[in-house]
Length: 152
Image (tube, rainbow, N blue to C red):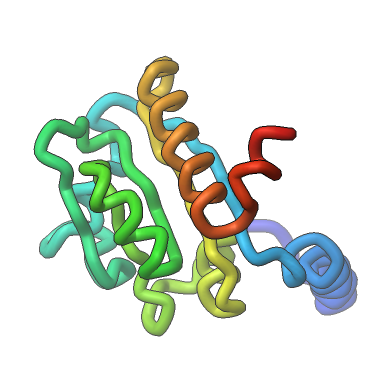
C-alpha cells in the first residue's frame, strides 16, 4: 500500500464532489453494464441468503430459466418488480445497509436515483441484447413517452 496524503485526499474528494454534482445528482436514472465470467465470483446466487453479498440485497428473484451469471442489479423497487415480472434474475439493493464500497449503486441508492446494472456473462450477446431491450421497455414505461422513444 502506498503513502496516504491528506492534501491529495482533499483534492480527489473535491473532484469526486464536482463530478457527482454535475454528472450524477441531477439524473433520475443510471444504466450500467458489466460483464462477468461463467460461474465466476459474482452471480445472482451471491446475493441470496448465505451468499457473500446477501446483506447487501433487500430482495432477490431467481428466474426459472435464467443463468445465474445474468442478472439485473437495481436500487428501486419499481425496477425490481418490472424485471421480476419478466422472469429475469434481479436483486434489489438494500439501500439502508448496503456495504459502502464506493460503488455507483451505493451512491445512487443513497441519493434515491433509479440505478440499473446489467450483469451478463462475457460473450453472451443475445442475452445482453435481450436485457437491454427490457431496459428500453422500462425507460419507455417510466421515463419517456412511446413517441419520444421512437425518435431516439
